[in-house]
Image (cartoon, rainbow, N blue to C red; front, side, top):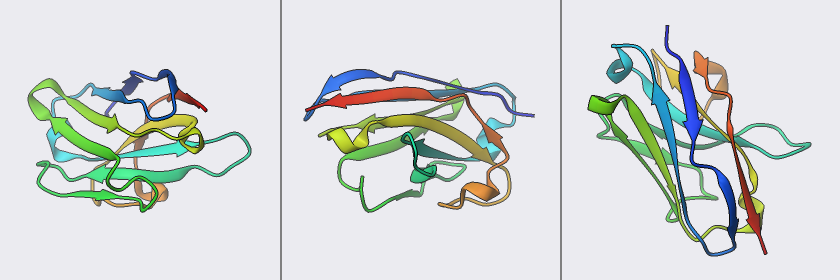
Amino acid sequence: QVQLVESGGGLVQAGGSLRLSCAASGRTFSSYAVGWFRQAPGKEREFVAAIRWGGSRTYYSDSVKGRFTISRDNAKNTVYLRLNSLKPEDTSVYYCAADSSRWGSDKESYDYWGQGTQVTVSS
């Protein structure tokens, strides 16, 4: 069992930056791949970024590639998402999720989800 808690969201102007954190409970967290997803009102939850168990491989959606960076510190049971050059269209609730068997952009494969943190980007 893994419990995930996101933090770090807030209100920022376009062009600004935020760092989101996903803190996990459970001593086996390092064996899980972690993904970040986001969901805007009236839209489906979409993939943002993912990182493999050891942190050696990462994967991004085209919409955030070059602006967002995912990383993890397994000693702290935490995964981070750095959001740079934010745009109003990045406004969403951001969720982290953990996957014990695969990694990637398919939200259906993720086993555990956090409650989300709101990111609002003003123009």
